[in-house]
Amino acid sequence: MRNMENRGAFSSKLAIVLATAGSAIGLGNIWRFPFITGQNGGAAFIIIYLVCVLFLGIPGMISEFIVGRRAHTNAARAYAQLGRKNWRFVGYLGILTSTIILGFYAVVAGWCLQYLFAAIAGQLNGDAQYIINYFQDFSTDPLKPSLWAVAFVLITHFVIARGVNKGIGRVSEMLMPLLLILLLILVVASCMLPGAFEGVKFLLKPDFSKMNSNVILEALGQAFFSLSLGTACLCTYASYFKNDTNLLKSASQIALLDSAIAILAGLMIFPTAFSVGVQPDSGPSLIFITIPNVFQQAFSALPWNGYILSCLFYALLVFAALTSTISMHEIGTAFFHEELNLPRKYATWILTVVCSVIAVFCSLSVGAYDIPVFGMSLMDFCDFLTAKFMLPVGGFLTSIIMGWFVNRQIIRDEFTNHGTVSESFFTAYMFSVRYVVPLCIVLIFLHQFGIL
Image (tube, rainbow, N blue to C red; front, side):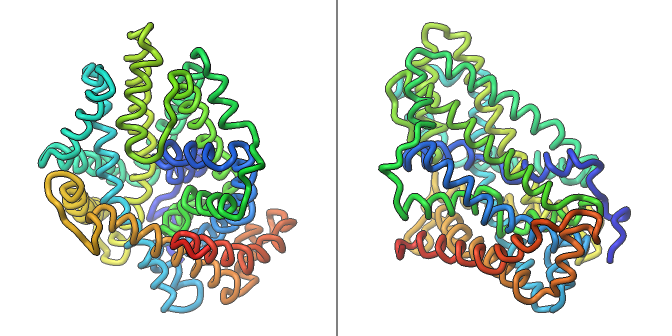
């Protein structure tokens, strides 16, 4: 086992929770969760989602935590140290997945960064058509989106280069409270608008008439992807956990914080949209077209407030994106640092260069130049490949390895911190990781392709 002090560790339990929660909290919490919730029964969907987090999300997180903390090394070596060398493949898969995701995620993160500067400069003022044209002109520019994407990767780089404690830990302890404060300010402002209550009711009033198998499968998928399962992120971060970290408690706190942020995002978006009679959609169009338009209309009587809230909204997006890109960058950095015995600063640059190249090509594929791959843009293909195949396969293999092949005593020792933590939920965890988690991931996989 590698010496933790030689490779760094999170300085406190708070840093563990904030950094790991930050890896899960990203743009998807803001642009996908509210839309999916409103579309699938509001509070009824939220209830099912929380059940899915309990039986799929938390056991899946604990499994990856055990892999990482037991070995205190990068994901590939950590899986190999569980018992079989060929299990390194699962770690390699997670590292490759996170690298590809970081590449195309940086494109959207770069858009957020550009919009933050545009909001500060007062360039997002105009009618609905102006906002649409603004986004189309920017996203199809051959140079600007690529530069902003690379800029975001470089910002992430400088955090990672400072190490686990001084970089990831300290930045997470700063960004996560700021993110929560900004979100709460926007929620309060949204809920004070005329007609906002209809948006709150739409989000939180249970509509059980919409409940069906499709809604359950949507909740399963949201729980899986929202918590960063299958990316090797949780495994890598857990390798920096101290040996007295309560894995069950940490996983529960992280899942709770992630879910709370997603629900608050809904309370920010729906009241504002309903106050001006706009139906929120999902994806980039929500945050780059719909929201600027909504802010213009909702706060037209108070233009200064509209300006401030627009700036705060895009600052929120940048912070949310950054906490995610930091975690994805660290996965590959740890791998190159330890497997190639490179100084951390050089390992960090390898990931930065690789991800910047992916980001530039992905940006060009949806903007100035068409780079088709199997009938999709390169960016859409990267999203399709990782979300539809690589993430479910990584999560499924981890659950099978942990549930059926790793020595049960090893798992018990890590779960209970060698007997110092109660094992009251250990049996429930083992049942979930053996049967519930693999079954849920198979259902998610089949649902994505319309088989279920």
